[in-house]
Length: 247
Length: 241
Image (cartoon, rainbow over all chains, first blue to last red; front, side, top):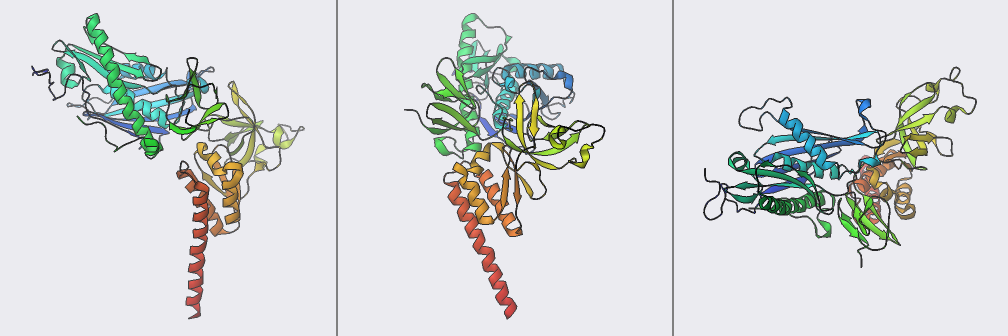
């Protein structure tokens, strides 16, 4: 497979600094306190938030602050071959990194002795689910009315054919040279998630961070739009057609 | 100049002027005041706040709340106050100072499932909110229907100096108890008035962000008044025939 042709066009027809089509919808689940749905290319992910609420089991509660629990889970039908629904090593890791990426934004100290539960279900996976899941979880938290210092937007950068690219898809992740998912708080200008699978030179790393942040800003605009559409009915000049950017 | 009112989401910078941050905003750096919730930002006098459009009720001392009795021990009741914390109502508050855990049975006063109008007496980060019912107009709610709205919409239901709630009460001849926790009890002798008041409250809940809402509610109440009356007259005429 040609990951990058001589014209700088990638295997799915994108340019090197282009994200996939992104669509975010806030709300949608009736029984959760807050929820969001995201389509990030072929990724389809739902996030639901409960809380702040009582902590069970009680011994997990903290008298000084609230706690955040995140469960990232892939449906058995989310990938080509059936995935065992039991939490895998990878899912436990992603739950942990998403939790740690959200924690700087969520003002848990306002609710001591409580928990905020975030449930993320991946319905369809196509590479870059942790970024898409983090973006959706952030919208779901805002939808639940949980105080946050900033939104968290996420997008990956990477390297294929010795070229730094934005938003790595499944093929590029498998056959490429590096994948670097990033979570970013746009107003505070802080990175909350940064992982790297592969090898980058310091220059390539700098470039990845730079275009990764650009990707996060694009996702952030769509997060804003999703919340505006639900809460403000497109008043205030915000909002749009409900669809995300097109390729 | 800063915009007085606008829609914001978490992380939106409201102003970097010399204002005092109040509810649902946080200070970033030295100057920047940022929203922490989805809602409407308001700059008033020298303060900045955000009126949230989502979120749970957070108890505040002196708030009137409508609680539901969950359970009781031999010394106190626990009230569900639609929050992340349970309200704690001590038995001495109801029985008086000479309460005895041996002699007095709590279930005789308040049973599980009872609705109670209560006031938050004390609340801080270290303990669950302490509520009291020893005040005028507080205590067990015997009659009326419960309507739940989003806690963030309660100020809208009350309106500026109580205009909205007065409009609904006078138009439907009902008595409405509004808990700051988003629980509203409507008491009305007339079944039609009760339905109309409930409809008006739900309307405020769903249209909280629209402008001139009091007028819209008044219109709805008045038009609603006319329609059933016309129908009733027609029916009476039919009977005559």
